[in-house]
Image 1 (cartoon, rainbow, N blue to C red):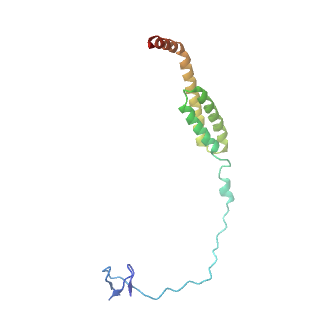
Image 2: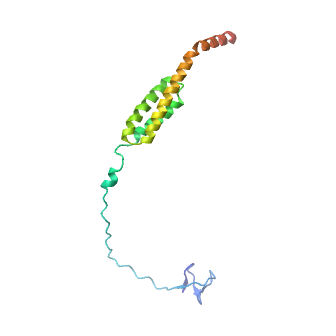
Image 3: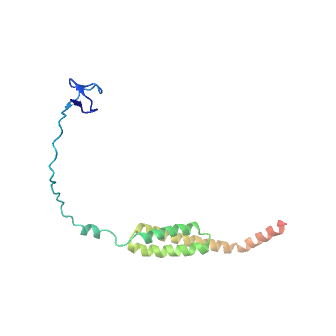
Length: 145
């Protein structure tokens, strides 16, 4: 007779290695299963309803819109980069709204619009203070040497 926990030989129903009274295992092997497998019957699954619930397009345009909107906001003081990135973010956002990924498309549209507004305000501010900047640069050049 052998211990169920550690597999060592037991004397009088008590394992010497574990010091725990455990039921004994019969050393006879378990019966072998029938070699002929029983067929597994799977129920019919109608997948047409599950497939039609998914959006038909991908989210790639929406993701691109959001990424370009973020980039446009990061470089909004470089108007030659920000304006094209923001315009492309707006276009991809509006196209992405119809294809899937509506939340990211909305985020791209908002970020593109904010980038355009901030860039235009930066250009207006630069033009409004352009004469002051020229005077400041002339003063610096005068005292440089």
